[in-house]
Length: 444
Ligand code: LLP
Image: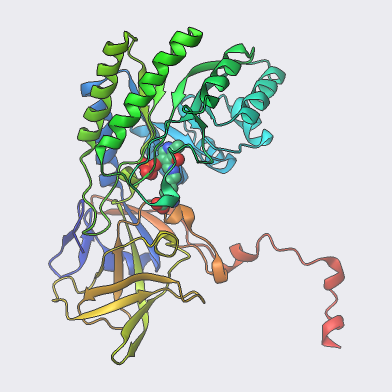
């Protein structure tokens, strides 16, 4: 397992993150446990914010909270002077409860409900990123009822085919997100928005996909978007003041991945926009980016306790841990690859090739196929790296497993930011209808 961020091996041979011994964390907080390196999250936030300040001050970096949304994380993002992208009433609620400044919230989603849009209007979120014609009309109507003008960006699909997994590509014409430039629907929506009394169109948004390593995709997206800004100006007179180019920068999960530095991405985007603005004679728009995975992904690890070990001679050795697809669905859903280590045996040499199985009743519940580890025994603390993005947020209670706790580590301190669920949490919303409450019916 590659040591990322502040990870190191301490003098008792344990994995340490931001000054905290992970084996001690597992003992203190139990397993499975998500451990997030707060110092690394903050330093990546600062890389984004500082690079934009340096190359393009008229900009805003917003964190895509779908990656990992908790109240402590919203606080952290507010402290780092960033904005927040939310995609549901639940993420908006989390942000508001953490007292995140509503005017720095961008509300996304391809099917926001009337209730969610009302919630956004009441909270006076900064921008609603409108995805489709239905939402545009609905928002105009709701804003009228609220006697306000909704400030919006329009999500358009630039037709860029980013080289990433099919499930996480979003910028093509055949996509459930946004309105395509190529078929004229984006232009039509702009004309419609401009004609609406309770809509104030501020600019455009696109997002081409996730886990992107090829910065050319960003260059193409920025060029296409600026070309479209020009076309819109020519045809309607409207000049987009804001250009949100989405998130997507890739991170390190395994040796297959070669992430690009944040600053390079910022330079690519800002240089492309500047050149295009000069070329078309357009004023420089405010640039917004909304990274998620690159902020939280490498900062997180998951700690597990090893339980049963099944050696099938000449076939495979399965090492089962006390979590699995409930806390990390990504291997099952996207064939995602991860690296692992034995946190209490970091100095022991690799001795065997094993596969890491989860505890769900599902053959596909495998976290890693074929990883080389020191000899593993029941009770060891297994660590999987780069689990900070889309793990906790995609976790489930399948098989009625409880969701793990989350701790932030920072310079030797470990703070609980999400408590481990209890069995009582699992049945909290269960209702037994009165007609079933008579025990005699089945005891008879
Ligand atoms: N903005 C929009 C409009 C998005 O749809 C996304 C991610 C982001 C920003 C943040 O992208 P990031 O910087 O994290 O790549 N569950 C999948 C990823 C789904 C991506 C959804 N959209 C996974 O686990 O790989």
